[in-house]
Length: 495
Image (tube, rainbow, N blue to C red; front, side, top):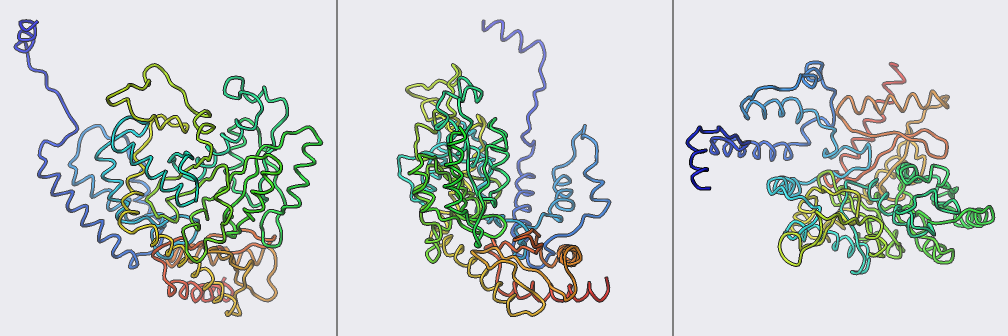
């Protein structure tokens, strides 16, 4: 054998390649420059527009064909700096309030970088990243008041976290082995219940679970846009009488439109009385549980059977990371676990650790935990709780500013940190009022002043400000009110 290997080696040298650099010193120098630029990018964030339209030449850059040959890394980075970093979505800017997103943090970004360098696959196994993944899930359980015996998994975000929880609910309440026989074997059609303000991801979940959109009953809401408990109770009774199987009630801890929080304690009691799975969509507001001044708003969340929450929102982790928690660990694992021969556990070695893919749909899982872990270690959970209180106080501050401005009006009183309002003008109604406020919104965005969105509440079109940003200050909100008034007058005088 040795003679054969020696002969093969002398027959010719094979030029083997790698993606590692030939000169690590050059890469090290460029990496230092990139980090310096990144620090400058965040330090000077207020000096840049929230958002700006890309010029034609930048758009054309993204239509370039597949690269066939190499180019220097410094040149590649230069293209990224000019064409990508200069035109962000804007959600890390202190005046980005369009959609409910976190604003990231530098420590989390370092965590993402280190996670990518380490390169671990979090499908499971006996290694440090897998233990940290489980530790961050345990910390989320502690934040929600869940028992240590509960289980959970880190996922891409709130939509997937909700799908995980609702899949476990379906299997637990189906009355048949859905994994073996499929949804066609369910003898009574299942019914899930949420308010008419429930997030659209729940419709997607019903469709993906093979139940169909009609399986989700939208229950009317009260004047505060919270699910009407009496209407819910009546719907459950009517469905039972009609031959359906009520399976799950979805409580919302913070609706997207207004931030309304369902009465979670009342829903927990009703779910127990009716033998329903109690799932809480907490992607907006579950983490209010760690806020010292406002935690009472989500009382009852600790009684849920499953919770969806988003560390990339009020824990400000860089995108993307969500978390699904399930009280019954066996029901959770039994919903997803599959053990092929190539992923069997061993008593020792790399395969002796827990298989984390047994708790969700992904076998390949990124190292999402490190960015959450590092930021929590640096700042402590109490600071994140105070920042949540700060955002909620800012929402009420903005509401007071709007009430004090004659040209503006609230469409719904702020519940937490989401403010819905509009510019009003005598004589304008319906579509003309909507057109005016839409134009204000677009000019705020195009001018790089602020990013707000719009929606419809109580049948009225309005502007929507979601303050989910640790960089926002009250003077930013003062500016928003001034600029909204200025632009409204500008549009009316010079349409």
